[in-house]
Image (cartoon, rainbow, N blue to C red; front, top):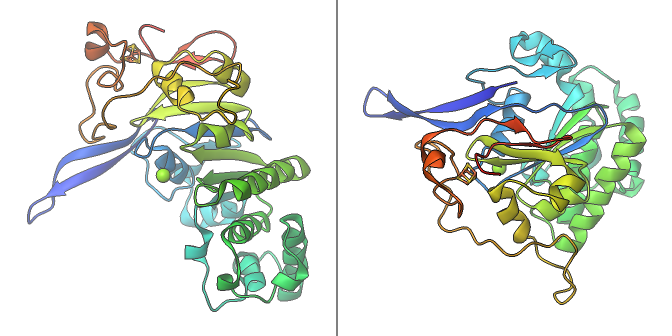
Amino acid sequence: NHLKTYFPITSGLFNRTVGHVKAVDDISITLKEGEAFGLVGESGSGKSTVGKTIVRLADKTSGEVKFKGIDLHQLSEKELRKLRPKLQLIFQDPYSSLNPRVRVGDAIGEALINHGLATKAEARELVLEVMDACGLSTYHYDRFPHEFSGGQRQRIGIARALVLNPDLIIADEPVSALDVSIQAQIINLFRKLQVSRGLTYLFISHDLSVVEHLCTRIGVMYLGTMMETASRDELFRNPLHPYTKALLSAVPVPIPKKKRKDQKERIVLSGDIPNPANPPSGCKFHTRCPFATDICREQLPVFRHAGGDHYIACHLA
Ligand code: SF4
Ligand code: MG
């Protein structure tokens, strides 16, 4: 609710704070149990910081994060630790968090033992079960991380999160480092697990076509601000925000001659994403928006209801 995460910019000998990077600047999202919500935006839009702030890997500046009614940022370290298994994060490259000398099966079961949720023998059973669910076999248990391909490593990353029996998985660009053919396999795995285990996902990606296959609701972020949220079908069929339109028009068409029904005329954005330490006045998108007028430069558009489950922040749309 109205989440803000600002990082101070310091300068000089005494680390005087000279400004703030407004990485997350008043974001509200409601995740329904069992749904997959896709958070989309260019790099630098603050979407990873949203994920990190939810699980308290980053401190919020203001606003609140509630999980089943519990305000996560009010919990003591001990209370948070107890709840941790229920909220799991999956990163782009699980390899970097795997100890090269620890066998993969043991790495997957590590947190179970650390959290006191299972004995060694019980952990082994649970690990083998989630490995199987993630398309890894018994044979992989005693292998070392370097023996796995990129796609298999992501399966290990998913298994590590899953073994704790979480309710919410925040996956931050989990397929971005993988080949396209492998991406599809991992997305399908995410989908299968969502159904079989009743998982809720916050799925973070810069790639709308990745999110399209998994998420039934999508939010589009730009410079720390939510520009548009809607159900997937509504967003793809009827995007209202100029930024969403531009992103959608850049989604490649699989068969060039056969335009998809919802394919829009290409809108090419000029320039780069502005510096979040010094965001544009008014609508943060105005410096790149082909439809910007005076009001856009002066007034911040409110995030408003646009019918059904559709919300946007734009003066003109
Ligand atoms: Fe473009 Fe103005 Fe809408 Fe912002 S408010 S997206 S600048 S038209
Ligand atoms: Mg990121």
